[in-house]
Image (cartoon, rainbow, N blue to C red; front, side, top):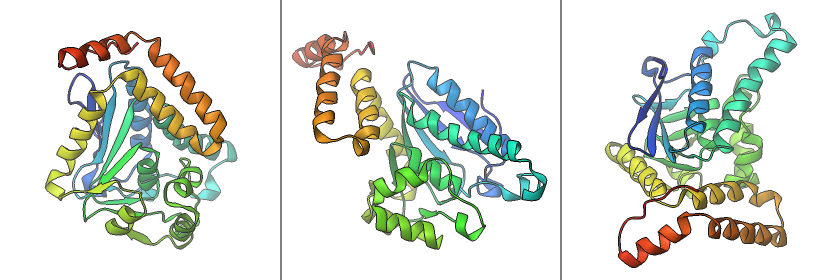
Amino acid sequence: MSSDRIVFERTSDHTALLRFNRPDRLNALDPAALASLHAELGRINADPDLRAVVLTGTGRAFSAGADLKEMGSTPGDVTVRQARGDLQLFQDITRRMVESRTVFIAAINGIAVGVGAELSIASDIRIGTDATEVMLSEVKRGLFETNGVMHYLPRLVGHGRAAQWLLTGERVPARTLLDAGFLTELVPADQLLARARHLADAVAANAPVSIRLVKRLLRRTWETDLETMMQYEVDGMMACMASEDIAEGVQAFIEKRTPRWLGR
C-alpha cells in the first residue's frame, strides 16, 4: 500500500515504479516518508515476481534529502538510544536495496541531496538529465553520511572524486556525474522516465536466477580477489545450469521466441 509520501505503482508483472512524493518540499524525506519507504522496500523484497524497480521523484527534484525541519528534536534533546535507532532505519533502507533480488534503477530527475543522493548510490543503475545534480551536503550541516555512501561512493567514482564531493559538499552537475561514471547516461528530461522503464523492462526480460547472481557478485567484487571471484563465477554458472530456466532459455532461442522464465 502506498502512502502519500512514497508512491508504489506496479507497471507490469515484473516491474514497478517507486516515487518520492512531496514535490512541495522537493521530496524531502521526513520520518513518515522514511518509515513508508522502509516498509515499501520490505514488500518489494517479499514479492518473488518483481524483478526491477524504477526509483524517482515527483516534480523537479529527485529528493532534497532528510527534512531537517521535520526531523523533530534538536540534537541535545535526542537520547543516544533514540538516535542510534533512527540511524539504523536509514541503514536498513540501504540493506533492503542492496541485498534485494530486485534491481533498482534510479531515474534522477533533478537535485539529489544528502540521503536522496545516498539512495541513488544504493541503486544498481543511475540515469539522469541535464537537470540532475548531486550534493552530499552533510559537512555543511555538521552531519555525517549514512546509507553506505562511504563504502560505495569511492568504488563508484574513485577515491579522489569521492573525497572532493564529500569534503566540499558542493553540487556536482550532470556532466561531471556522467564523466565520473556515477550516471551511465543522460537523456532529455521528457524521456527520462520512459528510458528508465525501458531499462527495467530489459532487466525483467532476462533470466531471474542470472540477474540475481550478477547483482550479488557485482556487490562483492571490490572485496574479492581474482581467484575467489573466478570460483564464484563457476558456482554461479553451476547454479544457472541446475535451474529450470536454462532449458527454457535454450529452447526459446531455438524456437526464436521470448523465454517464459520460471525464476528457479
